[in-house]
Structures are given as C-alpha cells and as structure tokens.
Amino acid sequence: MRLSLFSTGLALWLLPLARTLPQVLAGVTLLALTSEAFRPANLSLVGELAGPKLRKQGFALNRLSINLGFSVGPALGGFLATYSFKSLFWVDGATSIAAGLVLLARFRDSAHKEPQTVSHLHLPSLALFDPRLLYFVLALLPVMVTFFQHQGAMSLYMVHELRLSEAAYGLMFTINTLIIVLAEVRTNAAMAHWPHGRALGLGALLLGIGFGALAFAHSISSIIVTVVIWTAGEIVFLPTLSAYVADLAPRGRAGEYMGYYLMAWGIAFAVAPWLGTAVMQRFGSQTLWLASLAFGLLSAVLLLRIAGGETAKRTAENRQLEAPVE
Image (cartoon, rainbow, N blue to C red; front, side, top):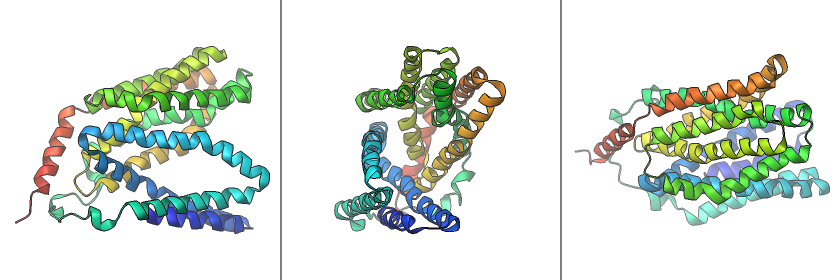
C-alpha cells in the first residue's frame, strides 16, 4: 500500500509534464499501474484487521471513507481547476504521498510479521484455479454490468431522453451518497450474521430492480425511488462481496484473491458504459433497463447458490493450514 501511494503521487506529479499523445498515454498507463495496485492490498488489510465476525462492517466502513472522499473531491477539484488544472495533479499527488506517510507511521512491517506456519505446497498455484472463486467472478459480472450503467446510459437517459437538467442527474448521486453515509455501516452490522449467499442474492436483486425500474420512471420523483432501491442493493451487496472473498481466500493469499475479484470490476467498468449506450442507441432505453433487470436477476440466482457452509469449510481449511508444520 505504501509503495502504491508513493509511486502514485510521483506519477501524478509527472503527468502534467507530458506534452505529446505518446507521453500522455505512457503517463496514464503508469498512473493506472501504480494507483490500482493499492486496492487488493487495502481490501486484504481491512479483512485482516476486522476479522471474520466484523468483516462486513469493516468493508462498509472502508466504503464510507471512500464515499466521503467522493463527496468532497469534486468540489475541491472544481476549486483547484479554476486556479490551474495542473494544481489538480500536484495536490492529488501530495495527498497520495501524505497517505503513504500516514501508513508509514501507523503500520510497521515488523508489527504484522507472524511465524510462517503455512505450507504453500497445499495451495493452488493460481487463485483463478479455485472453482469457487471462478464461479463467484462469473456470477458477479452480469450485475456489475447493470451497476455501472450509472456511469453512462443513466445520464443520457435522464438528460437527453427525459429532458431533465444536469443538476437533477447530480442530485441522484447526492442522494446515493447520503444514504450510504447514513445507513451502510449500520445495515451491515445488523446483517452480519446473514450467510453470504443470501446477502449477495438480495443485493443483486435490488440492483436489478432499481435499474430495471428506470424503464417506467419518467419524472424526477420516480427516478429518486429507483435510486433509493439500487442504493439499498449497493449497501448490502458491495461490502458482502469483499467479505466473501476475504473469507474464501486461503491464509496468506488474500491479496491474490482480491486482485481477481477486482479484475471482474475492471472488466465490467470497461464494458458496461459502452454496452449500455450501444443497446440504448440501437434498441431503445426501455430495452436497456429491462435487460439490466434480467442481468440483476441472473446474478441474484447464481449468487444465492453460494452456501454459508462453503465459507465455514474454507475457514476450517485455513485453520488446518495455520497449524505449525512439523
């Protein structure tokens, strides 16, 4: 995490120096490599510090901090942009390095070193060979394609088709963030005892219903209702995703498992905005939102098959692997 934050800060400082298209592409590639290396390690650390009983709340708290940053970041970015666009990169780089210094002061490697008691000969050489992880990633993709429609098709639908203002579109994300800040941690605390499959199925169902209902939403009040529905799904769904992967991963392999889990996010984020706008352009918005409902239902059915006993089985396997090797 420290290496990622320090290198991301330097990459952000270097990016404004780019003058040609190849230089910009090289700078953006470097920034992507350095910044995205943070997430698997971050999720692994949250899962480790929270422990099995508090993982859902821990990941919900982690998302709370992210959403608070999202609520402040655009306003701060707009202020800096009025002064200088280059200052965006300088300040962003400085905050990344400052975060790295906080971690350097707070966490020492020696404090987390434990006796090596895991025999890695018992573990697969690649996390994606784990059929449970592969099934989870494939089951996750349809509802993630639905979820990322707020990045493209939803704005076009509201502003160009329904003739609502850009401010109305922005209001939807203000509502989304407020609900998350007020309810996500408490909701996940109340649902901490739920089996992962039940929580994931409910979350995917609510996401599908929320976006699917846009097919029948034509006023700002009805769109707010849809946002509340899919935000409720997001609150239940996203912390449970990370908690399930943390429970599924063998001891010492959480970062690898989190990396493949985040790969599914990256694929959906790359495909969903393009696919959604293409479907809307060719077949109409109602087709897109009904297809989003179908994708959510598909993931809900697949994810409901994740049994609570599966996590217990993996936990028992981890405990067996943690036993000192003779």
